[in-house]
Image (cartoon, rainbow over all chains, first blue to last red; front, top):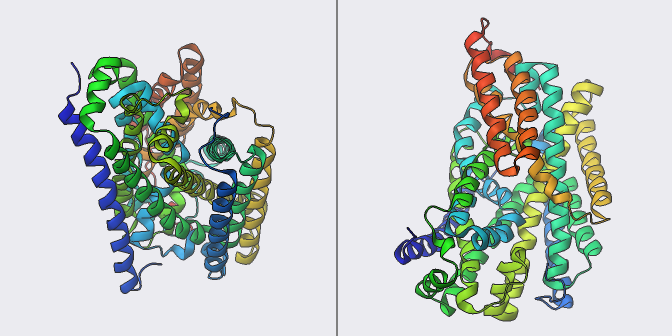
Amino acid sequence: MTFSEGFLSVLIYGSLIWCGVSALGLAAMLIRDGKSGEIW
Amino acid sequence: MAEDKVFLDPTVGWILLALFSVLWIGLGVYWGRRNKSFEDHALAGRNVGLALGTATAAATWITSNTTMLAPQFALQLGIWGMLAYSTAAFGLILFAPMAKRIRQLMPHGYTSGDFFRLRYGRVAWAIFLVFTLFYSLTWLVSMAMAGGILLEALAGIDYAWGMSVILAVCVIYTMRGGLAAVIGTDFIQSLIIIVGICVTGFAVLQNVSVSEIHANLTATKPALLDVLFPAAIMAIFNNLLFGLGEVFHNNVWWSRAFAFREGVASRAFLMGGLVWLPIPVAAGFIALASGALGVAVPSADMVGPLVIAEVLGGVGAVAIFIVVFCSLASSIDSLLAATSDLVTEDIWRRLLHPSSSADNLKRTAQWVTLGLGVLTWLVCLPRIGTLATVLFFAGPLVGSMIWPIVTGLYWRSANTVGAIGAMVLGAGVGLYFYFAIGFYVATLIATAVSMVWTLGACALAKGRFDWTRLKEAA
């Protein structure tokens, strides 16, 4: 039994998109923290 | 290592190294101006917000291993190899509720050593210090060595010079800026790493489709697609437990739990783990594409850079150089800061100079950081090739500490006999099987032995721990 092409696609594209969303999320969080004076 | 072929012109490599070195040191000096006391220096004033907290949890866990070893895992263990590597994220995710508990139980705490001393007494504390210092120094040495080796392989920068520069840069900004500099630079480094991996991943997919990768693997290396790949499935458990043991015990993570603002620790570790989770797959799948792209791979440990440089040329080589440099710096600085705090708080303050002033402790921590840097440099300079493998040797040590920590944080029945026995027996039996069978079972066995002993000691315990004893004044 082997992993299918569809599974591999979801895994690869899902990971890359997840990374992109994470980077945007971190930047957005920093802006939000900055606006409320809570960076540190 | 493919030392005969470099991916980047050495001059470009030196220019990148110089630019990032100036940036990190400049930021370290700038952020260090805020530090007035040991608490500021070691714990960034205990006021770190969610964005920086999340980024530092993720960035510290992204070592050069994540960006270089994940492709190697994929090449050797296939899809399960990437997924096995991703399980290390559960160390951060499961630490999230513990970080909240730590912050509640120990509002004035500094290190994980403080917890062992107050919870289990001096003997357990001493064993813990031996285990954790061995692990931390080994990790530090392996990262610095990896820095020299990778800069040489990527850009032809001489090993001694590359290792010395990256170590010196991290020592300088950690000395000057303390944890604030580490956490601040971690934010920038995490963004660079994640964006770099994301962009290079999509760029590789412009040159080869997932369909072609799958077809090539089916024809040439079907085992890499096997759902029941035994070696890879074993790697999942070992990686998972090693990750749990490392995060649960090490002061790198405890110092962050103490440094995050009230209410932030739990969410920051959870989100840091989620940020980290896809990275081994995003960085690792590139290795699976090597066959479909027709890239020859003479050495598995350089498969990631080989494929990226082959497909993306000079731009790809610059990208991988920056990502690797940031991965190294984000881990080395954290290890320097956390280990120096451990030595300063647990050995200098608690054992040698209990009446040290806040200013004296801050200066001591800075000197200890410098000392750790010099020690690491001296160990790394001869380039003993097998030294990095000692890190695997530490697996049973960190695995044996999982249960004393978890039960010690949540169960009043957890006790000194249980903690000492769990660490000594667990590590001892684990190390025996490390040599008798192999590294891939050692952590698992150490954790199991430690669990049985700890649970037995808890069940037989008559006394109940008073949680207020953990609220020791600073």
